[in-house]
Image 1 (cartoon, rainbow, N blue to C red):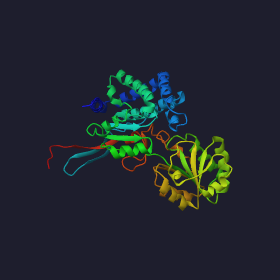
Image 2: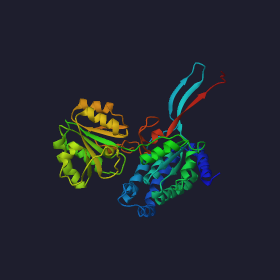
Image 3: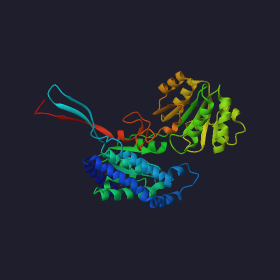
Image 4: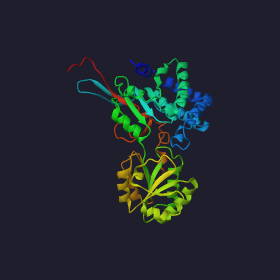
Length: 413
Protein backbone atom coordinates (compact mmCIF):
# COMPACT_ATOMS: atom_id res chain seq x y z
CA UNK A 1 0.00 0.00 0.00
CA UNK A 2 1.38 3.41 -0.97
CA UNK A 3 1.94 6.25 1.48
CA UNK A 4 -0.72 8.33 -0.32
CA UNK A 5 -3.31 5.56 -0.01
CA UNK A 6 -2.56 5.24 3.71
CA UNK A 7 -3.14 8.97 4.18
CA UNK A 8 -6.44 8.79 2.29
CA UNK A 9 -7.54 5.91 4.53
CA UNK A 10 -6.68 8.01 7.60
CA UNK A 11 -8.83 10.85 6.25
CA UNK A 12 -11.69 8.44 5.66
CA UNK A 13 -11.43 7.16 9.25
CA UNK A 14 -11.30 10.72 10.62
CA UNK A 15 -14.54 11.61 8.83
CA UNK A 16 -16.51 9.49 11.29
CA UNK A 17 -15.20 11.58 14.18
CA UNK A 18 -16.24 14.74 12.38
CA UNK A 19 -19.83 13.58 11.95
CA UNK A 20 -20.25 13.34 15.71
CA UNK A 21 -19.21 16.94 16.41
CA UNK A 22 -21.72 19.56 17.50
CA UNK A 23 -22.40 22.51 15.23
CA UNK A 24 -21.06 24.94 17.81
CA UNK A 25 -17.71 23.17 17.91
CA UNK A 26 -17.39 23.21 14.13
CA UNK A 27 -18.23 26.91 14.02
CA UNK A 28 -15.55 27.64 16.62
CA UNK A 29 -12.98 25.78 14.55
CA UNK A 30 -13.91 27.80 11.47
CA UNK A 31 -13.86 31.12 13.34
CA UNK A 32 -10.40 30.35 14.65
CA UNK A 33 -9.29 29.31 11.14
CA UNK A 34 -10.56 32.60 9.70
CA UNK A 35 -8.71 34.57 12.39
CA UNK A 36 -5.53 32.51 11.98
CA UNK A 37 -5.38 33.29 8.26
CA UNK A 38 -5.03 36.96 9.15
CA UNK A 39 -2.57 36.29 11.98
CA UNK A 40 -0.40 34.22 9.66
CA UNK A 41 -0.88 36.47 6.63
CA UNK A 42 2.84 37.33 6.31
CA UNK A 43 3.81 33.65 6.03
CA UNK A 44 1.00 32.88 3.58
CA UNK A 45 1.79 35.87 1.37
CA UNK A 46 5.50 34.99 1.46
CA UNK A 47 4.65 31.47 0.27
CA UNK A 48 2.41 32.94 -2.43
CA UNK A 49 5.28 35.13 -3.62
CA UNK A 50 7.40 32.00 -4.10
CA UNK A 51 4.73 30.52 -6.35
CA UNK A 52 4.24 33.75 -8.29
CA UNK A 53 7.95 33.94 -9.04
CA UNK A 54 7.65 30.67 -10.95
CA UNK A 55 4.84 31.94 -13.23
CA UNK A 56 4.91 34.33 -16.18
CA UNK A 57 2.98 37.50 -15.33
CA UNK A 58 1.28 37.26 -18.73
CA UNK A 59 -0.22 33.87 -17.90
CA UNK A 60 -4.03 34.15 -17.44
CA UNK A 61 -3.64 32.01 -14.31
CA UNK A 62 -1.35 34.58 -12.68
CA UNK A 63 -4.25 36.63 -11.37
CA UNK A 64 -5.96 33.51 -10.06
CA UNK A 65 -2.82 32.57 -8.18
CA UNK A 66 -2.16 36.02 -6.77
CA UNK A 67 -2.95 36.65 -3.10
CA UNK A 68 -2.96 40.12 -1.58
CA UNK A 69 -3.75 41.26 1.96
CA UNK A 70 -7.21 42.29 0.76
CA UNK A 71 -7.84 38.96 -0.96
CA UNK A 72 -6.73 37.10 2.16
CA UNK A 73 -9.10 39.21 4.24
CA UNK A 74 -11.87 38.34 1.79
CA UNK A 75 -11.10 34.63 2.19
CA UNK A 76 -11.19 35.01 5.96
CA UNK A 77 -14.47 36.92 5.74
CA UNK A 78 -15.96 34.23 3.53
CA UNK A 79 -15.17 31.59 6.16
CA UNK A 80 -16.77 33.77 8.83
CA UNK A 81 -19.93 33.86 6.71
CA UNK A 82 -19.93 30.06 6.49
CA UNK A 83 -20.10 29.86 10.30
CA UNK A 84 -23.37 31.82 10.21
CA UNK A 85 -25.06 29.47 7.75
CA UNK A 86 -27.44 26.76 8.91
CA UNK A 87 -26.00 23.30 9.41
CA UNK A 88 -26.95 21.37 6.24
CA UNK A 89 -26.63 17.93 7.86
CA UNK A 90 -29.25 16.33 10.07
CA UNK A 91 -32.29 18.09 8.57
CA UNK A 92 -35.49 16.01 8.46
CA UNK A 93 -36.78 16.37 4.91
CA UNK A 94 -39.70 13.99 5.27
CA UNK A 95 -41.38 12.18 8.16
CA UNK A 96 -44.35 9.83 8.13
CA UNK A 97 -45.66 6.58 9.56
CA UNK A 98 -46.11 3.71 7.13
CA UNK A 99 -49.22 1.48 7.22
CA UNK A 100 -47.17 -1.21 8.97
CA UNK A 101 -46.33 1.18 11.82
CA UNK A 102 -42.73 1.93 10.80
CA UNK A 103 -41.74 5.55 11.39
CA UNK A 104 -39.94 6.71 8.27
CA UNK A 105 -37.67 9.77 8.05
CA UNK A 106 -35.56 11.14 5.23
CA UNK A 107 -32.60 13.01 6.72
CA UNK A 108 -29.73 14.96 5.20
CA UNK A 109 -26.35 13.40 5.93
CA UNK A 110 -22.71 14.24 5.04
CA UNK A 111 -21.34 12.82 1.82
CA UNK A 112 -18.33 11.46 3.73
CA UNK A 113 -15.01 12.24 2.06
CA UNK A 114 -14.94 14.88 -0.66
CA UNK A 115 -11.91 15.20 -2.93
CA UNK A 116 -11.17 18.27 -5.03
CA UNK A 117 -8.68 18.72 -7.85
CA UNK A 118 -8.02 22.32 -8.84
CA UNK A 119 -5.62 24.67 -10.57
CA UNK A 120 -3.76 27.72 -9.30
CA UNK A 121 -6.39 29.32 -7.06
CA UNK A 122 -5.22 29.06 -3.42
CA UNK A 123 -8.52 30.45 -2.09
CA UNK A 124 -10.06 27.14 -3.14
CA UNK A 125 -8.10 25.38 -0.38
CA UNK A 126 -9.65 27.54 2.34
CA UNK A 127 -13.12 27.61 0.77
CA UNK A 128 -13.47 23.86 0.25
CA UNK A 129 -11.94 22.98 3.61
CA UNK A 130 -14.33 25.33 5.41
CA UNK A 131 -17.39 24.11 3.54
CA UNK A 132 -16.47 20.47 4.08
CA UNK A 133 -15.88 20.91 7.79
CA UNK A 134 -19.15 22.82 8.21
CA UNK A 135 -21.06 20.04 6.43
CA UNK A 136 -19.12 17.38 8.38
CA UNK A 137 -17.21 16.03 5.40
CA UNK A 138 -13.51 15.24 5.50
CA UNK A 139 -11.68 16.44 2.40
CA UNK A 140 -8.76 15.52 0.20
CA UNK A 141 -7.24 18.41 -1.74
CA UNK A 142 -5.07 18.13 -4.84
CA UNK A 143 -3.82 21.50 -6.04
CA UNK A 144 -1.51 22.23 -8.93
CA UNK A 145 2.25 22.64 -8.74
CA UNK A 146 1.73 26.36 -9.47
CA UNK A 147 0.23 27.03 -6.04
CA UNK A 148 1.95 24.40 -3.95
CA UNK A 149 3.73 26.69 -1.46
CA UNK A 150 0.61 28.79 -0.93
CA UNK A 151 -1.68 25.80 -0.52
CA UNK A 152 0.70 24.19 1.95
CA UNK A 153 0.92 27.41 4.01
CA UNK A 154 -2.87 27.68 4.26
CA UNK A 155 -3.33 24.03 5.19
CA UNK A 156 -0.56 24.31 7.78
CA UNK A 157 -2.57 27.05 9.50
CA UNK A 158 -5.73 24.93 9.42
CA UNK A 159 -3.96 21.86 10.76
CA UNK A 160 -2.75 23.84 13.76
CA UNK A 161 -6.28 25.06 14.44
CA UNK A 162 -7.59 21.49 14.27
CA UNK A 163 -4.91 20.31 16.69
CA UNK A 164 -5.77 23.17 19.06
CA UNK A 165 -9.31 21.78 19.14
CA UNK A 166 -8.00 18.24 19.65
CA UNK A 167 -9.15 17.16 16.21
CA UNK A 168 -7.10 15.10 13.74
CA UNK A 169 -5.23 17.05 11.09
CA UNK A 170 -6.11 14.23 8.68
CA UNK A 171 -9.62 15.71 8.37
CA UNK A 172 -8.08 17.93 5.68
CA UNK A 173 -5.48 16.18 3.54
CA UNK A 174 -3.38 18.15 1.07
CA UNK A 175 -1.76 15.86 -1.47
CA UNK A 176 1.60 16.53 -3.16
CA UNK A 177 1.35 18.39 -6.49
CA UNK A 178 2.80 15.60 -8.63
CA UNK A 179 0.38 14.39 -11.28
CA UNK A 180 1.05 10.71 -10.51
CA UNK A 181 -0.80 11.20 -7.22
CA UNK A 182 -4.04 11.71 -9.15
CA UNK A 183 -4.26 8.01 -9.96
CA UNK A 184 -4.47 7.27 -6.24
CA UNK A 185 -7.54 9.51 -6.06
CA UNK A 186 -9.16 8.00 -9.12
CA UNK A 187 -8.99 4.47 -7.72
CA UNK A 188 -9.78 5.14 -4.05
CA UNK A 189 -13.41 4.14 -4.49
CA UNK A 190 -13.66 2.66 -1.00
CA UNK A 191 -12.37 5.75 0.78
CA UNK A 192 -13.45 8.76 -1.32
CA UNK A 193 -17.12 9.39 -2.09
CA UNK A 194 -16.89 12.07 -4.75
CA UNK A 195 -14.27 14.00 -6.73
CA UNK A 196 -14.85 17.60 -7.81
CA UNK A 197 -12.53 19.03 -10.48
CA UNK A 198 -12.25 22.81 -10.59
CA UNK A 199 -10.23 24.46 -13.32
CA UNK A 200 -9.76 24.33 -17.07
CA UNK A 201 -11.98 22.33 -19.38
CA UNK A 202 -9.06 19.99 -20.11
CA UNK A 203 -8.68 19.22 -16.40
CA UNK A 204 -12.39 18.59 -16.00
CA UNK A 205 -12.56 16.28 -19.00
CA UNK A 206 -9.46 14.40 -17.85
CA UNK A 207 -11.02 13.69 -14.46
CA UNK A 208 -14.34 12.67 -16.04
CA UNK A 209 -12.69 10.17 -18.35
CA UNK A 210 -10.30 8.59 -15.86
CA UNK A 211 -11.87 8.57 -12.39
CA UNK A 212 -13.52 5.47 -10.96
CA UNK A 213 -14.78 7.66 -8.12
CA UNK A 214 -18.03 9.55 -8.96
CA UNK A 215 -17.40 13.04 -10.36
CA UNK A 216 -19.33 16.28 -9.96
CA UNK A 217 -18.19 18.74 -12.61
CA UNK A 218 -17.60 22.41 -12.06
CA UNK A 219 -17.54 23.56 -15.62
CA UNK A 220 -15.50 26.02 -17.58
CA UNK A 221 -17.42 29.15 -18.49
CA UNK A 222 -17.93 30.38 -22.04
CA UNK A 223 -20.34 33.13 -21.05
CA UNK A 224 -22.33 35.49 -23.26
CA UNK A 225 -23.97 38.88 -22.89
CA UNK A 226 -26.67 39.42 -25.50
CA UNK A 227 -27.53 43.06 -26.23
CA UNK A 228 -31.07 43.08 -27.60
CA UNK A 229 -32.36 45.72 -30.02
CA UNK A 230 -34.45 47.26 -27.22
CA UNK A 231 -31.60 47.51 -24.72
CA UNK A 232 -30.62 50.67 -22.90
CA UNK A 233 -27.27 51.35 -24.58
CA UNK A 234 -25.53 52.83 -21.55
CA UNK A 235 -26.75 50.02 -19.33
CA UNK A 236 -25.56 47.47 -21.87
CA UNK A 237 -22.11 49.08 -22.07
CA UNK A 238 -21.81 49.09 -18.28
CA UNK A 239 -22.81 45.43 -18.00
CA UNK A 240 -20.50 44.24 -20.79
CA UNK A 241 -17.52 46.19 -19.44
CA UNK A 242 -18.09 44.81 -15.94
CA UNK A 243 -18.61 41.25 -17.18
CA UNK A 244 -15.37 41.38 -19.17
CA UNK A 245 -12.97 43.57 -17.18
CA UNK A 246 -13.80 43.41 -13.46
CA UNK A 247 -11.86 40.14 -13.15
CA UNK A 248 -11.23 38.57 -16.55
CA UNK A 249 -9.46 35.44 -15.29
CA UNK A 250 -12.51 33.88 -13.63
CA UNK A 251 -15.10 31.50 -15.07
CA UNK A 252 -18.06 33.90 -14.83
CA UNK A 253 -16.37 36.59 -16.94
CA UNK A 254 -17.94 37.28 -20.33
CA UNK A 255 -16.30 35.70 -23.37
CA UNK A 256 -18.61 36.77 -26.19
CA UNK A 257 -20.87 39.77 -26.64
CA UNK A 258 -23.78 39.23 -29.02
CA UNK A 259 -25.51 42.33 -30.36
CA UNK A 260 -28.62 42.77 -32.48
CA UNK A 261 -27.88 44.27 -35.88
CA UNK A 262 -30.45 47.00 -35.31
CA UNK A 263 -28.56 48.44 -32.36
CA UNK A 264 -25.01 47.39 -33.30
CA UNK A 265 -23.73 50.68 -34.82
CA UNK A 266 -24.70 52.77 -31.81
CA UNK A 267 -23.83 50.20 -29.17
CA UNK A 268 -20.41 49.18 -30.55
CA UNK A 269 -19.34 52.80 -30.86
CA UNK A 270 -20.11 53.38 -27.18
CA UNK A 271 -18.64 50.04 -26.13
CA UNK A 272 -15.27 50.50 -27.83
CA UNK A 273 -14.78 53.86 -26.14
CA UNK A 274 -15.10 52.09 -22.77
CA UNK A 275 -13.13 48.95 -23.69
CA UNK A 276 -10.26 50.93 -25.19
CA UNK A 277 -9.44 52.28 -21.72
CA UNK A 278 -8.86 48.67 -20.59
CA UNK A 279 -7.07 47.66 -23.81
CA UNK A 280 -9.45 44.78 -24.37
CA UNK A 281 -8.63 42.68 -27.44
CA UNK A 282 -11.65 42.07 -29.70
CA UNK A 283 -12.19 39.14 -32.08
CA UNK A 284 -14.97 40.27 -34.40
CA UNK A 285 -17.12 38.60 -37.03
CA UNK A 286 -17.25 40.14 -40.51
CA UNK A 287 -20.18 42.46 -39.80
CA UNK A 288 -18.86 43.83 -36.50
CA UNK A 289 -15.31 44.05 -37.89
CA UNK A 290 -16.49 46.67 -40.39
CA UNK A 291 -18.09 48.73 -37.61
CA UNK A 292 -15.05 48.38 -35.34
CA UNK A 293 -12.40 49.45 -37.86
CA UNK A 294 -9.95 51.80 -36.22
CA UNK A 295 -10.13 50.04 -32.84
CA UNK A 296 -6.47 49.42 -31.92
CA UNK A 297 -6.81 45.84 -30.65
CA UNK A 298 -9.06 44.34 -33.31
CA UNK A 299 -8.77 40.93 -34.97
CA UNK A 300 -10.96 38.95 -37.32
CA UNK A 301 -12.63 36.13 -35.42
CA UNK A 302 -12.12 32.52 -36.34
CA UNK A 303 -14.79 29.89 -35.69
CA UNK A 304 -12.89 28.56 -32.71
CA UNK A 305 -12.85 31.99 -31.04
CA UNK A 306 -16.54 31.61 -30.26
CA UNK A 307 -15.81 28.46 -28.25
CA UNK A 308 -12.99 30.09 -26.24
CA UNK A 309 -12.91 30.79 -22.53
CA UNK A 310 -10.47 33.69 -22.82
CA UNK A 311 -9.57 34.17 -19.11
CA UNK A 312 -7.95 37.47 -20.11
CA UNK A 313 -8.76 40.96 -21.37
CA UNK A 314 -10.06 39.61 -24.67
CA UNK A 315 -13.47 38.64 -26.00
CA UNK A 316 -15.35 37.79 -29.17
CA UNK A 317 -18.00 39.99 -30.81
CA UNK A 318 -20.79 38.84 -33.09
CA UNK A 319 -23.74 40.64 -34.66
CA UNK A 320 -26.95 38.60 -34.77
CA UNK A 321 -30.21 39.22 -36.59
CA UNK A 322 -32.53 38.76 -33.61
CA UNK A 323 -33.12 36.91 -30.33
CA UNK A 324 -33.68 33.60 -32.13
CA UNK A 325 -30.19 33.85 -33.66
CA UNK A 326 -28.72 34.78 -30.28
CA UNK A 327 -30.37 31.78 -28.60
CA UNK A 328 -29.08 29.50 -31.34
CA UNK A 329 -25.52 30.84 -30.98
CA UNK A 330 -25.56 30.37 -27.19
CA UNK A 331 -26.93 26.84 -27.52
CA UNK A 332 -24.10 25.96 -29.92
CA UNK A 333 -21.17 27.73 -28.22
CA UNK A 334 -22.06 28.07 -24.54
CA UNK A 335 -20.97 25.78 -21.73
CA UNK A 336 -24.20 26.11 -19.69
CA UNK A 337 -22.53 28.32 -17.12
CA UNK A 338 -23.83 31.93 -17.11
CA UNK A 339 -25.72 33.85 -19.80
CA UNK A 340 -27.19 37.37 -19.82
CA UNK A 341 -29.58 39.46 -21.88
CA UNK A 342 -29.81 43.24 -21.79
CA UNK A 343 -33.19 44.52 -22.91
CA UNK A 344 -36.12 46.67 -21.82
CA UNK A 345 -38.55 44.28 -23.49
CA UNK A 346 -39.96 42.04 -20.76
CA UNK A 347 -41.43 39.47 -23.15
CA UNK A 348 -38.07 38.92 -24.86
CA UNK A 349 -36.29 38.80 -21.51
CA UNK A 350 -38.70 36.21 -20.12
CA UNK A 351 -38.30 34.06 -23.22
CA UNK A 352 -34.50 34.24 -22.93
CA UNK A 353 -34.58 33.30 -19.22
CA UNK A 354 -36.88 30.38 -19.99
CA UNK A 355 -35.11 28.94 -23.03
CA UNK A 356 -31.41 29.40 -22.29
CA UNK A 357 -29.93 26.20 -20.89
CA UNK A 358 -27.46 27.44 -18.29
CA UNK A 359 -26.86 27.20 -14.55
CA UNK A 360 -27.46 30.95 -14.15
CA UNK A 361 -29.32 33.32 -16.48
CA UNK A 362 -29.52 37.09 -16.09
CA UNK A 363 -31.72 39.94 -17.26
CA UNK A 364 -30.06 43.36 -17.19
CA UNK A 365 -27.18 42.26 -14.95
CA UNK A 366 -23.58 41.11 -15.26
CA UNK A 367 -22.62 37.43 -15.38
CA UNK A 368 -20.04 38.18 -12.70
CA UNK A 369 -22.63 37.56 -9.98
CA UNK A 370 -22.52 33.78 -10.47
CA UNK A 371 -20.75 33.10 -7.22
CA UNK A 372 -21.68 31.23 -4.07
CA UNK A 373 -20.92 34.14 -1.80
CA UNK A 374 -22.83 36.62 -3.99
CA UNK A 375 -25.84 34.28 -3.89
CA UNK A 376 -25.71 34.27 -0.10
CA UNK A 377 -24.47 30.68 0.03
CA UNK A 378 -21.14 31.42 1.70
CA UNK A 379 -18.05 30.15 -0.09
CA UNK A 380 -18.33 27.65 -2.94
CA UNK A 381 -16.64 24.51 -4.17
CA UNK A 382 -17.17 25.70 -7.73
CA UNK A 383 -19.87 26.39 -10.31
CA UNK A 384 -21.53 23.18 -11.44
CA UNK A 385 -22.72 23.13 -15.05
CA UNK A 386 -24.14 19.63 -14.93
CA UNK A 387 -27.69 18.74 -13.93
CA UNK A 388 -27.30 15.94 -11.40
CA UNK A 389 -27.03 16.65 -7.65
CA UNK A 390 -25.91 20.28 -7.95
CA UNK A 391 -26.21 23.05 -10.53
CA UNK A 392 -24.83 26.56 -10.30
CA UNK A 393 -22.81 27.57 -7.22
CA UNK A 394 -21.93 24.26 -5.57
CA UNK A 395 -21.95 25.37 -1.97
CA UNK A 396 -22.71 24.19 1.55
CA UNK A 397 -26.30 23.13 0.91
CA UNK A 398 -25.17 20.58 -1.70
CA UNK A 399 -22.40 18.95 0.35
CA UNK A 400 -24.90 16.55 1.85
CA UNK A 401 -26.84 13.57 0.60
CA UNK A 402 -29.86 11.77 2.06
CA UNK A 403 -30.41 8.84 4.35
CA UNK A 404 -33.63 6.96 5.05
CA UNK A 405 -34.09 6.20 8.76
CA UNK A 406 -36.78 3.78 9.91
CA UNK A 407 -37.84 3.14 13.51
CA UNK A 408 -39.90 0.08 14.32
CA UNK A 409 -41.37 -2.03 17.08
CA UNK A 410 -40.42 -5.47 15.86
CA UNK A 411 -41.98 -5.34 12.39
CA UNK A 412 -40.90 -8.05 9.95
CA UNK A 413 -41.74 -8.54 6.31
